[in-house]
Each structure stands twice: as C-alpha cells, then as structure tokens.
Length: 588
Image 1 (tube, rainbow, N blue to C red):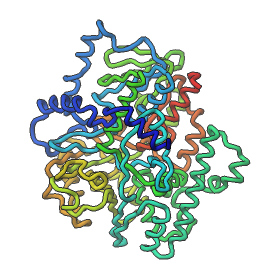
Image 2 (cartoon, helix red, strand yellow):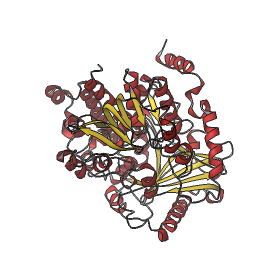
Image 3 (cartoon, rainbow, N blue to C red):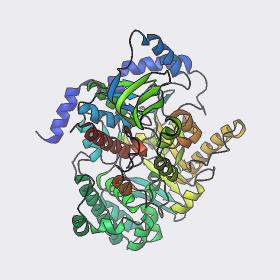
Image 4 (cartoon, rainbow, N blue to C red):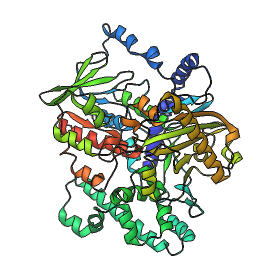
C-alpha cells in the first residue's frame, strides 16, 4: 500500500469528525444559536473579535464562564493534582506540542482563556459569512506528487493523526508595482518562476536560476544540521555545505547584489517581504532562502473550511489521545519554586502542578506579568528586551454578494505597492497612515464556493510597526481612522485592478492593532513574534536554543520560538519543543 493509500485509509478510519465544520455541526449550531440571541444590531464597523469565531466580545464568559465552572468545582474538580506537561495557550504551536507529547504517552493539559482553541487559526461569522481570520498560505504541505516533496508540516501533523484538507492555491502571488507599471504573477515551480521573470526582465533568468540553486544548498545544509541534532560536523559543513557558511552572515539585499539582480527583478522576488516583516537589507538570507525556496519549489496551500477546521481537528485528536483540553481558563501566574517553574495558577486561584510548562505566549508577557519579581534571570530579561517585536496588522474583512469572477477577481493573493524598496516600506510602517504595501486574498478563488454558491470573501492586510498606533486609539479619532483606512484600501484595490467590489459589500469587519491587543493579549497586537535579523535568525536561535533555557521547567512554543512566526513555523516550533521536552522528561 502506498503512503497516499495508507493516509486515505487512516482518514476513513478516523470517521466523519475529521472535517471540523461538518463533523461538529451540532456544536456550531448550538454556539451560533446562542450568538444570535446576544449579537443583534448592525454588522458594519463593529469592534468584534477578529479571531474568535462564534461569540461577540465580553459574552463568552457569561455563557460558558468561570462562575459556572466554579460552582461545579467542589463536586467535580476540573484538574488533577499534577500533569507531565501543561500547555498554556492553544495556538497551532501549542496544539502541535501537546499532540506530540500526548502521542508519546505523556499526560498533557491544555489551557485556553477563550472559548475556542486555535489562537489565530480561527474564523468568525457575520451574517451569512464565515471569515478566515489570518491564514494566507501554508508551505511544506505537499503530498509527494507532481514532483513536490512530502512536506515537513504535513509530515508532522500526519504523524500525530491530524489529516487536514490541504488545498493548493493557484499561484504563488500576483504583485502590482506602480513604479514599474508591472502586473506580475509568480507561478509555482522553480523553472516556471525563472521563465516568468525572464519574460518580464530579459537577461535575469540565469541569475534567478543561480539564486534558487543557492537556496537549495541552504535548504540541504539546514536539513543536515537538523539531522545531527544541531551538532553538525565542521568538516562536513566546510566541504559539503560551504555556500551555507558563506552566506550565513549576509542579508537578503547583500546576496541579491552579489548575484547581480536588476532593481526590477529584486522587486519581483521580494513580494513575500510581508511574511518576514523586516527590511530585506537587515533580514537574514538564510531565513529568506528557506522560505522562498519551499514556497516556489513545492507550492502553497490553505485549509478547506478555513484554518479553524485545522484547529478543531487538532483539538479532537488531542482528546482522542487522552489529553485534557480546557477552554475559558485564564492562567494568570506561573508557580515558581527554587528558581524552577512547577505549575500554573488560574484566575480562580486553582493551582495545578506539572513537570514542564510550555507557553504559547510571548516571553515579554510571561516574564513581565506572570512570574514573581526576581524569578526571571537577568540574562533572559536582557535578551527579551533586545529583540524587536514583529509587525502588527490592520485587517479588513469583506463579505461580497457576488462571485469573484463576476467582479473581475481572478487571483488568490495580490500584493500592491509602489515598489519593493523594503527599507522605505519598513520606515513608513512606523507611521499610522494608509499603508504603501497591501496584501489582499480571495479564498474563494482557491476554493470555489468556500463562502457560498453566490458570494465570496476578501481579506485586506497591512502591517505596521508595533508602536505605530500609539496615540491613535482615542475615542474621537479611532473609529474615523478605522473607516477611512478601510475605505482607502478598497479605493486603492479598485483603482489598481479595475475590479468593482464596493457595490457588492454586504458585510465588513475592521480590525486594528488595538483589536488584536484586546482579544489576543499579544504586545501591541503583534502577530509576528520577534523579527528575524542577520544576527538573530533561525540559525543563531537554533544553535543557542539550549543556552536560552533560562528558567528550568519552562519553554515557549508558537511564533516566539526558534523558527519565528507564521503557521508553518509555529507548527514546527511546537513539534521541536515537544521533542526537546520528551528528552528532558526521559520519554525517548
């Protein structure tokens, strides 16, 4: 039986609950019925939670909250005295770590302060629309067919019994650059990408081929380092992976210049800039090479029925494995004894012990708010303070009463900018103004009928410096700013593409960095962990991972881990942290 046949048999054996939005229909219908009772009123421009699907703000505690649970506690205590591992926060990094640990026989407790698991892997409902919150693309999800490798993310999730429905998007991206008068679509496949750039910028094709060859060498070196448990042979590195050593200390811009790219080709290759959020003259080429290579070589995917389906599949698999998953439980403090974390305390004062605590939160939050004064080593505080927080988003979610093709929308993902001068874009992101770089996705282009048979959705995203919005959240100007920004983004999109979407808007939601602060608790609404610089990228973080275990009993998963931000990185971070935890606990 082939690997694909084995997977299909496993999917069928798992039964109908596999697809979150179908197998859990009763759960959704009950939740939506409750929401309709408390979520009346106009749907435009509300300050609702953009990541938590089926509840309005401040109501889920009233329906499922702490008081009801506390009343039952004397008769049916929710928690055991102790667990092997407690995972605080249920983003995909935390869920992946919990899955790997539970799959290895460990007693795991997952605690989530909201009423649904998944973190940013979520959706929300407005009227007849269910919106994807945050997922643009996943790499490393190939199934081994059509020349692509069997992706690392898919391998991790398959290994713990989570078989998501991955849908490949049509193209890598479409980028429209007003400075050049260029409307360019980047195809998947390295040879296809080379040919596409050569057609737009003659003479650059061979240089682009050299770039992808170099990216492939970087990828091979990283796979070797990983296979050696982060202890590679210097001789092997020097003889077989010299390109990795030569480029490790250089930025993306340095390598582009060394390869002799024209300004236009640089811009065409840099559209994914928003996925790293750091200006490319300060971004580690190693990070960029790995990301660009995997996306273009193997293609990108999204999750059918939105990324929330993935979170539900992960939660249900955890329960099958015997893990305990509790929502509506806020962890307010980590228990520390003799310098080591020994458990957690909830907002109700419940103290729960564990051998290890894994936080799917930022170290900034944990060290500053959740640990006793003096319990965090000075070196950990200095490192956290030295790192730069990644970007915070401004998002607009549109429910449109027409199909994409009826409005002239033919691409899944668009990028718009004057050019891809990332130093300029990065500096402008520090000001609270309509962004000069915009990303737009239309999931229904990749999955026809996803939103409905006669409608579709579009998601606009702009990224800002975490502190850009300070001083702009006052009651007077905040609402006006939100609406003006959204109106401006829609106008730019229509002007550049010629598509007419404004007259088809049936639902609109606007999320600012303040919205993300309110509902996720991340510093400044950050969604991108720490920025990946030349001196603080994947390689130095990975090589120092054990040196950065400053507090015994505590580790971090998710976007603030060694591989930084994004769905794929968070999943990999969760898996790697779980494997390290198993070694510490003597699980292998």
